[in-house]
Image (tube, rainbow, N blue to C red; front, top):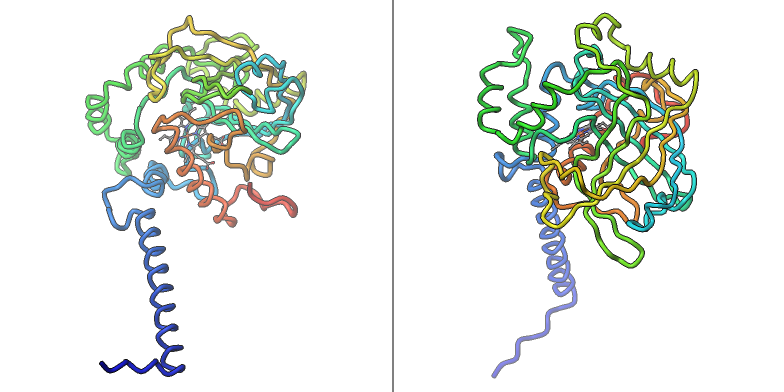
Length: 365
Ligand code: HEM
């Protein structure tokens, strides 16, 4: 039997090198494949954050330099005063009795940063509460009791159906009707939009998490919850026709006028689900008799125009949560985080179109 001569050192070095190149090539190929997968190139029909935000951007004119949804808003700063009652439900540091700084934003759910305020049926409050150890609780809440849709796919389809037809300046009514007929789950939201009073003030609205989350107490016990910021200013019902007479920007003007007189307060109420309550479907409200715990008060002290305000470069990603608060498996909630990141990346990279030059200190967050 003849033995194979050992490879000469140079050849051995080369085969070693070829092996390493092959490995690097394989790793690069895998990486490229994963990027292509995430970007949706391998399955053009798949719904990606990019496609959702493209659809939001295409409803009217693309709001370059602005949020692709809730594009018109105003920044605020204030304090969350936790009373400690929330600690029974969650070990989150911002629920331990104490006062924590807040940066927030009120907005209307529109794709147009110049939309007249009277056109905004859905108003919102977003907050970032920071604990002394740096942990943050970010939350985006809307002033309606339920969300219209239960899946990101339905959200996407509705956004496409609501696209403004350049010929008429309005969405195609037939496309909207077809969408509504195919989505009976929108009924509770539609009923709210038809019957709930319109108000002339962000201060008169209460704001709801709509998605469910999980509170984890110090012993590791998990409970399904939703939360609401309850207004302390009574509602004064008005009509869209009356609101239109107040000019396009009455919401920010009203907020600033009120804050020149005194701070504004909202009570943070946590609602605890019972077994069987729908946790992964924000179109369905929970029964009104569920346990509610008031865990603190949001005190809004100061409002500033968004153009150069402290909320402009913030992403109120609802999955930035402190230890003690976890997401549910609600597909809408899980789709929000990557869509907000995509919208955030677009607007932050459109520096020339930002509402005002970026301040010298402090970048995007
Ligand atoms: C699949 C469902 C949803 C999608 C794709 C979506 C998408 C978006 C996007 C892209 C933004 C702009 C983010 C940014 O540039 O910072 C936004 C803002 C916002 N969304 Fe949603 N959203 C969804 C569902 C919801 C739900 C269920 C709520 C519940 C309350 C909500 C509340 C808000 C609020 C409050 C803002 C404004 C945040 C701010 O003031 O910066 N969204 N949404």
